[in-house]
Image (cartoon, rainbow, N blue to C red; front, side, top):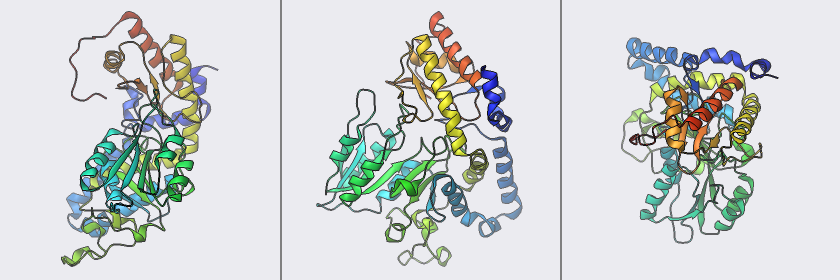
Amino acid sequence: MTASDFDNIDGLDRWRREFPILATTVYMISNSLGAMPAAAADSLADYARTWATRGVRAWEERWWEMSREIGDTIGGLIGAPAGSVSMHANVTTATAVALSCLQPVPRRNRIVCLESDFPSIIYLLREMQSVGWELIIVPAESDFSVQVDRVVDAIDHRTALVHLSHVLFKTSYIMNPAPIVAAAHHHGALVLLDGYQSAGIIPVDVAALGVDFFTGGCLKWLCGGPGAAFLATRPDLLPKLRPRLTGWLAHRAPFAFDTDPLVPRDDAMRMMGGTPPISAYYASLPGLDIIKAVGVDRIRARSKQMTARVLALAEKHGFPSIAPRDPERLAGTVAVDPPDALPVSRALKARDFLVDYRPGVGIRISPHFYNTMDEIDRTMATLADIVERKAYDRDAPARSVVT
């Protein structure tokens, strides 16, 4: 079967027309920023028209409850019940909100996290030590994976919260959270699972996972752009939580404008703060609709075939890869580490093959359901050609943003 034959076999190729950038670019960077659906431009135009014609009336007509609307849409994709998903500007803020529900006390003041978690979260947790939290960071192995047993062993009666990534961002390794959740709950601790690199590319059922909090965002595999991150909270836990990082959106009667103690809403909006970024919601809805229409199970099946092809071609060209070889443990990204990987990645981008680079693992190649096998073949052939001919500038000045 040729690459062209494969690309037509499951009908997913028809979705390509929904993403304008695919007409001019080989887009292999959905782990960082999903391709924009064409309908997002129409949705943002609708936002502009609403603002222009309805003005302040838009708040009562839709905007004030739009956080609940988009939260429930996301909930349907990750197995979270209606009313249990709150919206936030980014995952770091969502994590801070969850943490603000807890109070460190001498008998229970520990947070356990992974060295392989995204650094932004570790920065936040480190700073929380100044208010009484003790941070336990479980070290990574040489391949950036983290042994589940080491995480379990780090949890004890003083642990209040365990933070772990569902999919490790550098290697795309899928963690098995079940033993960790069991150990945490045995010791009376809560679990926050970071699903930024899982939601939209592998099936997620937060209820089945049994986690207390689940964070993620529309930015990456959900094709929704920045500004629409989310926090799913276990429904039976939700009424017991009182976040200290809060605001008027969480108030049951926000337009009373009193300064008495906040009376929190009954749903997930009790976890929210100030005025929400409505434009980000409009931008995100088309991507969510597409992911729902395609189906995460179909996306996962296509992703497994594509990542296997990347690994096979990396091996053919002699490029090392830190990616897990077990397809059940590999999510949507394959890191390939040729010589001079950083300048090679820049040379690829200069030729409109969009990838990214991460220290220690090399070039991350992240095909989504809208990519084709032919694009993977061309990406790997171009990469090999650049390496063989040394067609890159090793001495190019470093950029302030390395993607």
